[in-house]
Each structure stands twice: as structure tokens, then as C-alpha cells.
Length: 159
Length: 260
Image 1 (cartoon, each protein chain N blue to C red):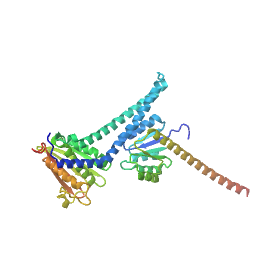
Image 2 (cartoon, each protein chain N blue to C red):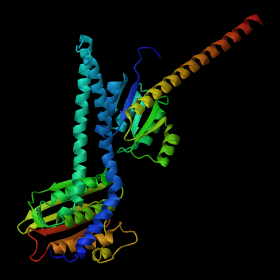
Image 3 (cartoon, rainbow over the protein chains, first blue to last red):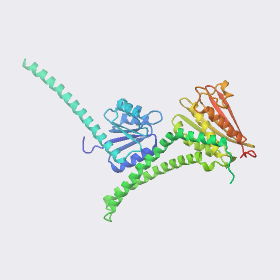
Image 4 (cartoon, each protein chain N blue to C red):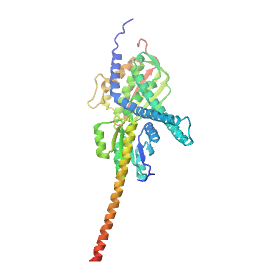
């Protein structure tokens, strides 16, 4: 990750006032690029077309609940860290979110700003580490392929 | 001071109110939780913003490079206050609705625009309708009627709850108010499952219920009819199974003599 890289955090909640509060805090206290939308479908379009490091989603939203939304987000961008921010904290939802959407963190409303910042920061780090690991794996694989072909050619040349 | 004679209807309305508030408490708490979460976060943001401004002003000089930071903080404060406006308005409306629906000092007769208790009931039901049931308000000007607002509030709540519960999946509840020469009419129309013809005559009977009926319907509608009787009004229902039901309430402008 280069020094100039600005991580992107996508916030999805059907309540404009929740988005407003989250945005004000994150803009004042962090340097992340903050994207917000009240529409899960629009958020999926953003995830499809834009690099997103952390996704924070509400649970109760019209058309699509937060777990279903995060499950689809995982299919589109598996390395982004997914956080559920919910006023309906219960064990069943938490289990569903972890199993179905590969949840990174489960936060309750009303939230604590310091905790939120920490969870998002760790989410950004996790996401960039997974990206880096993925990139190194790809590089290793291609090096391995090159080595194999080199070995093949060497064997051919000397036998 | 004369001892008030016990009023069984008023007692029954009060019991129904307590039960209704109990049933709605979780939903109302959740409706309050959203603006409260925003205010809670924003309060913290304002404290952080103030600390930063104090920090910049500590040496009594604002350097040119600090000016951008001050502008950024001021913009943040502005955003916070806009959200706070929304959040406070939402909380005030919820609490006002709770008071309108449940306050004991409104137990006396009064002149009231009945759209006020209807709005209060709809606000308290927002969590039950949200994302699922559309509320269409067709509110004609109706002025005020002499009534017992607390009792009417329970009747509106009961019929609106029935209407919402009658809708499986998504649908619409239309609330219509009209003024006539001798009184006002309120129609509450739903696109729900409807009531079978053989039950339609009996839904106001004491203790009537069907195994699959909506919760509390038996007692609620009996109570509604008795409250309307006390007001010299009427309650009528039309229904078509599979298409929905319409409850029509008519109220005269003044209470009948001796109606206290």
C-alpha cells in the first residue's frame, strides 16, 4: 500500500440522520474517503465500480436487510471488511450475519465514536493486509509458473 | 367534593391503553433509538470540534495554515446541527404522540380536531408500518368536535392496528376525514385480507373472536362501538375478503345531552 493511498469507507443506512452523524464524525476525525447512501442497491453499484475497503451497513432497511446486503457485497468485493451497525442486537441476527455475510464486526446503536473509529481502522488494516497477501500470492504463483517453465527449458537444453 | 361514580367504559379504555402502550413499547423505543444514536454521536463530535478550536485559539493567533482547519471544523459543526434539527424534531414528535395518546389530563371532554389523535396513533405505529404498509392521508378540513379525546384516541389506535395487522406482506391503509352538516366522518380503509361475510355481523359482539382473528380484535371493536355510542356516533364496516375492509366512524359536532 503506497503512502498516498486513501482508504474508502462506504456507509449504508436508510436513515439520513444516522449517515449524517457518522459522516460528520469520520470527516472530522479521520482522513478516509467517506461514501454514503440510503439505498442498498445503489451501494452495491458503488461496490461494483469503486474500490471500497470497509462497508458499514444498517440492519433494518427497506427492500434488503443489512445481512443480505453484506452477503451480496462479499460476492462483489470479498476483501472489504464488513461491519453491521444495528439497533436490533440479538444473538440470532449476529450468528446469521457472521455465517451468511462473513461479518468482520457487529456494532450496536447507539454507537461509541472511539470504538467505531477503532473498528473501522482495524477493518481498513485487515482489508489492506488481505489485499497485499492476495497480491503476493498471485506474484508467487506467477513466479512459480515461470520457474517451472525455466526448469523445463533447462532440462530440455541439457538432455 | 362529590365522589365520581365508577365509569366502567373509561376504565376499560384505560386498560386497553395500557395494553396498547405495552405492545408498542419496543417499536417506539426503537424509533427513539435512531435519533438518539445520531444525537449521541453528534454531541461527541461537537465536543471534539470545540476542543480543536480551543487548541487553535490557545496562542490567541490563527495562523493562515490553521484557517483551513477552522473552516473544516465550522463546516462539520454546521452538518452536525442540521442532523440535530432532524433528530430533535423526530424525538419531540414521538414524545408528543405518546402524551397525546396516553395523558390522563385529557380524559375530560374537549373540543378537538380528531386528526390530532389520528396523527398521534400513526406516529406511534410508524415502526409497525415501516417498509411494509403505506399510510395514505386524505385529510379534509373537519374543524373540531366535542368529544372525550382519550377514548377516541384508543378507538383510532385499535382500528388502525387492526388495519395494519390485516395486511399480509405489503399494502396500504388510507385514512380519510370529511366534514358534513351534522358531524364528521373518518374512514379507515385497508387492502388487507378482509372479513368473511358470516363474521361481519358479529365482529362487534361481546367476546366475538375467530381462531385466526387479529390479536385483540374481539374486545377492541366492542370497546370502539361503546365509545362511539357514548359520543352519539356510529361505527360501520364494509369488507370484501381478499380485497380489504373499511371502518367508517361518524361523530356529531357535539356530545349528546347527559353524555358526561
